[in-house]
Each structure stands twice: as C-alpha cells, then as structure tokens.
Length: 114
Image 1 (cartoon, helix red, strand yellow):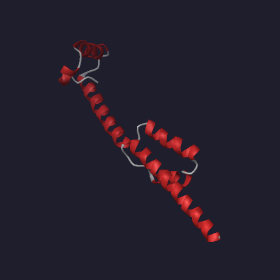
Image 2 (tube, helix red, strand yellow):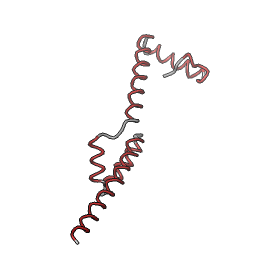
Image 3 (cartoon, rainbow, N blue to C red):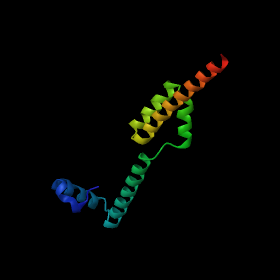
Image 4 (cartoon, helix red, strand yellow):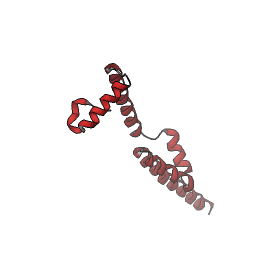
C-alpha cells in the first residue's frame, strides 16, 4: 500500500495510478485507512510468529526423533526456508542434543552390560 506522506520514495506515476485505481473502485478514505490498519496488524502478527520459539511438542519431537535424520533435518531446513529462523536453530539444537543423549544412553547400556 502506498503511503502518500512518503511520496519521495515512490514514482509519481505509481502514486497517481494507485489513486486512480482507488477512485475507479469507489474505495473511500475510511476503507483505505481500515485496510492500512489491518495490513500493519497482520505484518506485526507475522513478524511475531516468525520470531517465536519452538513449542514444547516441537522440542520433544526433534529431541526424540532427531536421530532419524531423513525426517528431522528436512523439517528443520523447511522451517528455515519458511522464515522461521529461530525455530529452525532450536530444531537443529534439539537434533544435536537428542543424538548426544541417544549416544550417551547406548554407551551407558553397553558399559553396564559388560
């Protein structure tokens, strides 16, 4: 959405075309303000969700099933590709700690069994 108060950042023709389009669709200033407010709200919600942490279920999943790299690594990469950078980093950390825990568990089991 074009903000007329920042007209120095846009081409004049683009601003005129946007206002012409709004006029042709009979969209008033009230609707434009409402859409701008909704757009800002949606952007804020999206940015908050992109910066959110991995849920407890996600942490447990990546920790327990992290050794199944065919499943866990593509899922962690997919999180990063979708923009969930923090969740992806936490997923890779859980995979690492899950593998370390399984290795420790199996090592202790082998040591105890003789």
